[in-house]
Length: 406
View 1 (cartoon, helix red, strand yellow):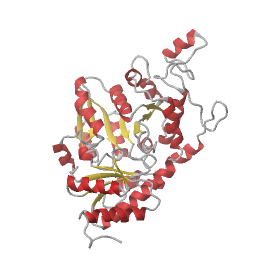
View 2 (tube, one colour):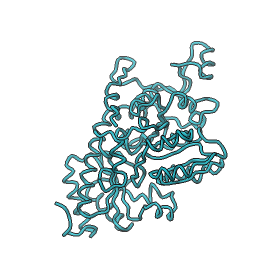
View 3 (cartoon, rainbow, N blue to C red):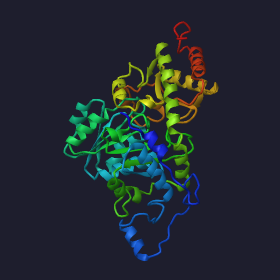
View 4 (spheres, rainbow, N blue to C red):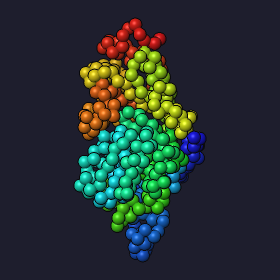
């Protein structure tokens, strides 16, 4: 893959109302019309360039949406007040009562809970399968299936979806392929690989400062317009609207995304290689030992590496908790959920971000109690970080003093 999203973002320029280098922020909840017929036409969806009500759209949100569509190479994009707002709107727009979804078994816990527990109110059922096994996905498809859903790099096990293969299967069955690309912005371009809809939690890497909650749906003009339809649009009617001020701040943070993603990946690759040499159970797509390494290498945009997430299995929940607490004391990062921050964040997903998944299912998919998910930060001296992390592991006897790399 060689999708020049970074160049496209660089070339995207917006001028503020008075010529500012940042677009002016729209600070209104409602918008005026010079003619009553224009208001009617806007309600009917027959006008462009007119604003109705901020739950429907705002100039600030459209600026951000255009930048995100440029990032993913889609026709357009809608922004939301959270990643879950984006995910649930897409699912409810595509599915009706009695329909069926084929989803990856390893997905964000909130997505899992929505599909398994909430959608049953509408008689919408989900089959959770290993989407790295395309044959298993094909076997799960029924006449009632309305979408195939996966994460490009899964949360938290970092399984890598073969998006091109899944797209081929989806098209064979006339199904949309929906891909959550939160873990791999710029590194993977699902739209170029055949995905129909791309979702992000903007809360994470794209914003990068852990000070907001937001989401986006990237897709065709027709699909994004359907989400905002005043009569039947899930986004419009559920009201998951992103505030204009926050949209403006995310747009400004996006400008450093290419630089940040390169550094996140560079640091994660360094640590993963060191931990593997130390004999630790590390999972990172940039390692040849990772089951998805070849798939990721084949479909990635190579300038941006293998992403900023890695996992370590330290054997037990007690080991995991003790290590995370000690690393926080040593200022290596924060014992906190989420990802994409400038500091390293670490959590035990089995008891946090994936806790919605029943324990027996966690074990079945390989999510051990001792698993720690790391979102690697932008540390300038990653060798120094490694030495301190290694010392923490030695202090807790997770690593022996004899068998560690230099």
